[in-house]
Length: 272
Image (cartoon, rainbow, N blue to C red):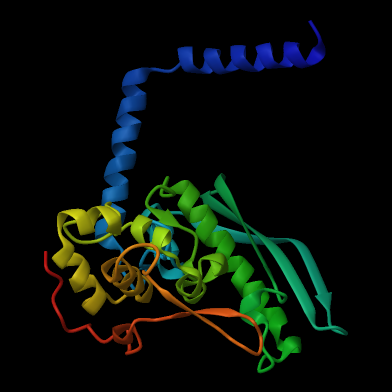
């Protein structure tokens, strides 16, 4: 038997020894306490302040800095921070920091979290930004990301929250709206109301009037557009494309009702 096989057998043996040594009644009790704690957190934190609404493509809300701080207070934990990597190029205006957040109860280390930020990120790429003032901004952002990461871990909350919304540039709603196709619209999951957990395609088959309501009243611009695409018809005519004669770029023509402010329905009730 070669060394790799021996290591695999040893790892499997060690894993089984851990499992066999568990007292399953205590494991079940711990799992129940985790679920109870998650419910307390969900009932305590405030949307829009402690966590943000789920962004397009995710069923999880995004934990924000105030929410992370409340979680640590509820658990009686203190936080310490350590810069484990940094680049400070004042000549070219580039700054990068990686921060470790250490959570403690008394002198005992409970868990750690990591966060990174650098001035090349898309959110800082603007002519209006003074590149040489971004050092402190990036340092604070890396610290915040590390704190949120540690809070999600220590509270076993990764199945109900994700990392801070503003950090998820790849899920930017405006980009998703521009590139959305009919398949994307059909497969978009709704994470609120009586049809929570269903895709727009499923909802359209069961309750097309609800999709009409989403088109006219949803606060999320991506949901409004997806609902409009489904109501417009088949994949072939769900959206019109316009070719820019000068650049050759293809642009999607939004339905007329989507050209208005997509967030103008704050005072209207959701039908559930």
